[in-house]
Amino acid sequence: MAHRHVVMVAIGVTTVLTVLVGLVVNIATGGTKPSLVYGAIAVVLTLLLAGTTMWLFRLQTPDGLKTLLRAHVDEYGRQDWAARAIALEVVDDQGRHGDAREMLCTWALHGTTRLLVVAGEFGSGKTWLLRWLAHDMARRGLSKWRTAPIPVLIELGSLLDKDIATRGKLLAESVPRPVAESDLDGRRGAVLLLLDGLDELLADARSADRVRATLRGIVRAEPTSTRFLVACRAHLLETTDLVQMLGEVIADSDRQDSTRSVVQRALGQVSLPGVVCIEPVSEGKAGTYLLGSKAGRLWKSVQDQEAYRELAHVPFTIFLLEEALPHLSDQTGRIDLPMLYAKAVEAWLSRCDLTATDQSIARLRLEELARAEFALRKGEMRRNVADVLGRQPSEADQMLLDSGILSHLDGRADFRHYSLFEYFLACALHRDMCTYSSHLLSRINLIYMYNVNRFLVPMLMRDEVSVAGRGELVSCREYSMFMAETGWRREGYGIWPSMDAPNGKRASTAGHPLDLGLNDRGVYTAADRDGDVPITGVSWYDAHVYCRHRGMRLPSSDELAASTDLRGEWSATWHSEPDSQLAALMPEGLVGLNPDLRLPALGFRAIGPSGS
Image (cartoon, rainbow, N blue to C red):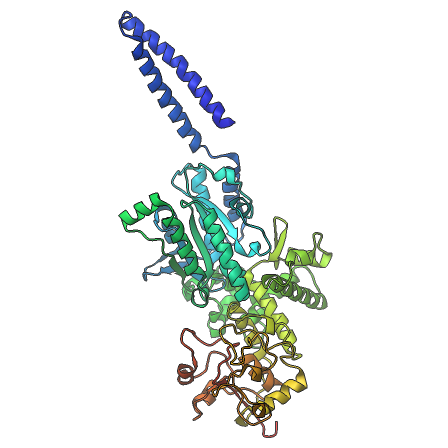
């Protein structure tokens, strides 16, 4: 309606001007010019004025879009880390290094490809970079920078239980506020769709299929002028084809747009996914940040310790160090990643004046929330953290929100950072495994949820006993006895989707390692189950809980290296298996060892006193 009103006014003004011009011409020529001149002048003036009015109208930013742009600017300004953000460096797929913000801004304003992937380790600043870019493009848009794209930020993790079958439904999920599809139609600036947390959608192979369908739907619903910036964990590039698939869907979309395709072919452009990887924060930058923080005095006293420096390579753990150092400085045990998170959580809960007992109850509640979130990601239930908390959280749950461990945005509660969800899920796993329950472990695919291993393995290693003795390869009979005594793997052997047993069973449905037949001869026989054949095809977790039950331990990497046995064996410290063994073990296409890996030639020996 406003559009038509403006045009009608423009035509009315043009008509009046045309009459006036006609009178002037008529008087100046003494009435000798034919009426055709008047008509020509009227047409030209009408077209010029109406066209100019339409152009000016299109430049006007609608109120809904202005609200979105202001929300991006305001939301970024409210973040306490925005004022002291660490300058990040990135390297692109051509090996070029540069400032992260400058490189992303250049791509957003002047880039030719439609897809760029920002990859990094957990806590490396991917979300911050996307929010900064949304803030920067919004600021430019509000200042009438007409070539700046319109930023639309989508947190992919929030789409788990949402219907986004249309573009309008997807835009309604944008943060920090929804945007109406009508606000984007006909705008001069292209849309920049910022998709944050691709890895947060994944829990197993089934969810990967669901994510592929979601991504295809997002791309196909967008016009070819829309460009995509996707943030994900670096390991996702190696373990799934999601990014490559997204690039192919975008390329297919471009091919269906003949105008765009002609231009791209003429300029030699292709819509292949570009990748920039966030580099670790240097020791100098991390030290400068922490020395200038509220924990500067404590950091000065521990900065020479390797364990602390190892934790200061990504922005989020640097932020956690600032919070946790007062509680870490008197710690006498091993300083590692789960300890850092535990002490940061302790610091946040302490601000709510919780007693030690209340803090323990709060941690159990957070583990329950992590279990619920995981079940949602697997599609086992349609309840997320917000549903478990309820629409009106209890006083205890409200404290978790007030502490900052959970965040509450637009009625949706979730963990403040995705790695906090992974940490509390690892805590729940550790609690189960201490009682030899594999119920939760057997449902988790630790290839897709790789980072959980970084928390869980150090937690379990704290339970390791220090014993000497002669190491013996564990036999099928010994492991079968252990399973019968403890009930370990009663709920299933776990998930390793890249491997099928010779008998056709999947790892997720088999109830016993021997049922998989993962030995170097093919299929275990009935005699093997009760015999002295060394067991293979077991994970690091299977080996660890066996040793724990027997009061024994896994060998160190040095002990394995000194062994003359060339078979593959798990070491006590995950990722320290000798290279000579790995070269013979690893199937083509796998990079590094995952502690939940099962291979036909991978077993273990237990070290302890004779007779254990």
